[in-house]
Length: 113
Length: 114
Image 1 (cartoon, rainbow over the protein chains, first blue to last red):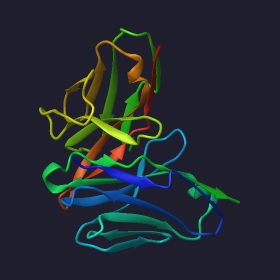
Image 2 (tube, rainbow over the protein chains, first blue to last red):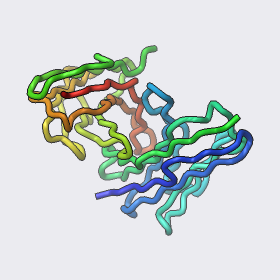
Image 3 (cartoon, rainbow over the protein chains, first blue to last red):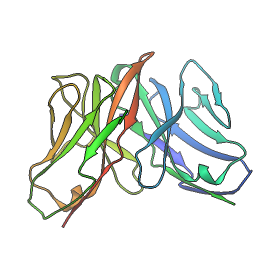
Image 4 (cartoon, each protein chain N blue to C red):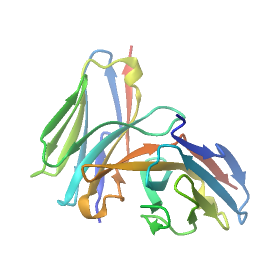
């Protein structure tokens, strides 16, 4: 089955710097790649997603890139702010089992003021 | 608009006790899910319900049962709780957009089994 690996497990950056989180997936049939942000004591919240027919997607300070050949995708956060501190999860699913979203193990991002 | 509501938020059980986690969504979504979250392991799918009247196993279904009571409600039952089921449980619902299921999660239920 699908396996999603996420790195790093923890990331500490200075406010204003950029942060990059990387994920790799194993099943070349995967076609949907969302990113979720989880703040302390809350459920994960979708922040951006990308589909396999697109290489890059941006939404203000966040962007996601997808390399289908290498089977990896990344989350980029620019001009980080303290409120970006949270746990971020990548995930993947494929068309013929779209209900089975497989998550990475998470990255704890700390933005130092 | 409440979104996805889970109850209870916290529960402590003794080994062998049973309990049911309740979940309701008010977004008219067809599909609902139960995930568990353990440190260093991300979220793992326990069961899902693609539509009212159907349920299917996810990655880690052993020790759990589910009921899709109606379109709004999806419950998770532990018949005989074990310490390995200590976890944070998340309910979610989804809408299908361009072939992909986009999930909205509840706030979670923290379960401790002693």
